[in-house]
Length: 432
View 1 (cartoon, rainbow, N blue to C red):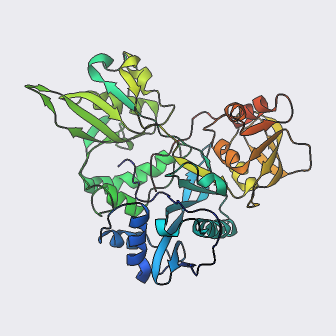
View 2 (view 1 turned 45 degrees about the vertical axis):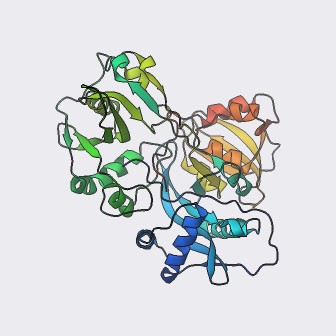
View 3 (view 1 turned 30 degrees about the vertical axis):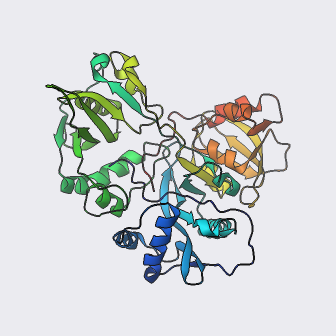
């Protein structure tokens, strides 16, 4: 459970072609051993031979690129299609980009640009409204039109100070919580997650291979897998409505238990189920501290506690999913909106996919459309800022204050925020 971050994106290379004979091509399955070794080199990790078999399980012809200097692979790139939940609960097909590296011996030769522009062109041709990735380095992917669209957020909870959950919180009559084996999780987890992700903007599909990795059925690159504790919440009808996965560090202060429970995954279909899962997590014997590494940024966990000050921010809160708009009309027609209105955006996109003026027209029922126009613009912004605003995780006002959005008509920033506001902030708990 939790993040399955065995991909990611890293590339120190930038700039121009320098006349070298490096070739960019789609790899075959036979190329995977050398490609996987280059991936490990790019991420500064020791190469593990068994990782190639993991790559083979995820291999899709035509979706993995390699940069080759002669016979040696010196750059890697992989993409696959996934579904991304957008505000309002609709899903759009996203080009998910991962495993991006360029070896340090081949920096500044334009290899990333060649692979990225090739993949984005193919994604646009397939009809993907957006592309997404997780940026290992902040200053690389804005050059290709991506902007940070979701964040991670976590909490440290001191149980002695917290005093448990507040009285009077909603419960689930007839509900129950039971531990599950990894085989049971593989059986019921995917169907539950499909229902859950439709409720959470920013969430993406979990693959079959990903579930096998999370439950120890497949070994993936990275730290050695250890079986977590997994508990399922069921309502009175026996339907799974929540899941929590966690690990416990077995520490003692002399004769006194001083254990830390780390939540790896917690998802609930409704607020009463979430309360029941938190009540369970906060009552595990011997635990004195609960660490929640990644939770939705607007999750009310601290406010559920008798003393909210017992929850302090987890250190690693940062940007996570980055998004790039490839089809403005399709992307913005899919999501819902917070108020009726109209605003004209002047978008600059060096690759051309979103470049131009766009009129965003929204209705009282939450629907909207974004069409090309020649009208005078209200706001000016780069395509990366458009990606940041798309899921509703950032405000137009904050981007304007940071000089990432320019207000061309008085009041346009405030009007844009009314239109783009969402009931829930976007969150993606899964690496890719």
